Length: 430
Image 1 (spheres, one colour):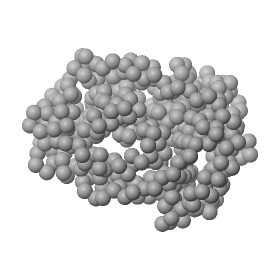
Image 2: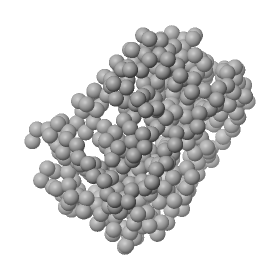
Image 3: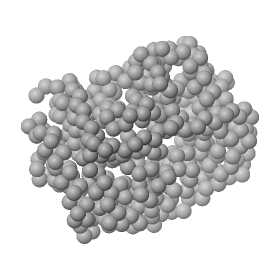
Image 4: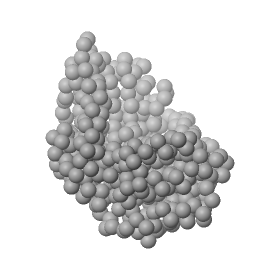
């Protein structure tokens, strides 16, 4: 396994509660700036589905000292890139720039943390933008939202876990400026955020810059995380949905797995298990479903709604997703998956299988962390979700410590009575 590099990390907390992570790397004249707010889809109140994502859009509509859309223009004019995203447990904003533009990025991020332009015009405009995004990515797209939007309501019961995080049109249309201002006051407090600065930066002068730009933002109370716990399933749940645009049927199976933050050692075998099941031509499901039985057109197994196993708090879903020919019954797909899980649980791993998977995972983790932009985002996510940015460097070794027996034991827990099954019926042209 490739040796994991050691990443130097310094951290400080400003008086207003903002946590600052500094990760110097002087090899290239590039810096990454990321602000991660502890608010995501699971934080949305009932009647405000899609609000976290809507607010991500609003935060690009200008602030007290920055005109509408000028944030992007300033960063791009300095030779940088800028973006943001909304996940289950956080919303992030980030820039990658030449190191001489670090102060510009700090000014821009601090200005919108202090005073975004939440106006009737901006709100109405961004509601329209988000609705159009939903039309393009979900309503008018084959397999749109499958299964990340459609499986959670089958597997979970509580609103934080089960609701439509992209947003219901009625909820979006009824949002007011007062709603948006209250959401900002509650969740966009400095004490509810992590600022991560990575790359070509001197630690002490950069810490002083962070204090200069962010230290004067008033502190506000930090909200508690949403309560998302609920009992495990004791019997299989099944639901079907018709996709009028899909040309081939599909099925998604979801299981609840151990807490990735509170019980990481029990969680990691499932990360390895997902790789063994689906990654690469030699994976179990690829060999069984696609190549041998011809029962699948494609398959995947992954943890988390968006396939990143380390960016979400409990509860996290392990999903097996299969697109299959029309002539193959969904029950035969389920049966084949169950048989492969049973074989793993009873016969264990083959010689060299764990070593091969560990080498691939370590290589992928190291590759993702090699660039300043990848390291910036991962440091920030690990710090916010797990409380330790250092896990980025430790993770290849932690995964290499997962044993074949623990992977087999994880496979044994993925029983039919603990899963939710969502069948997608293809309604598109034959």
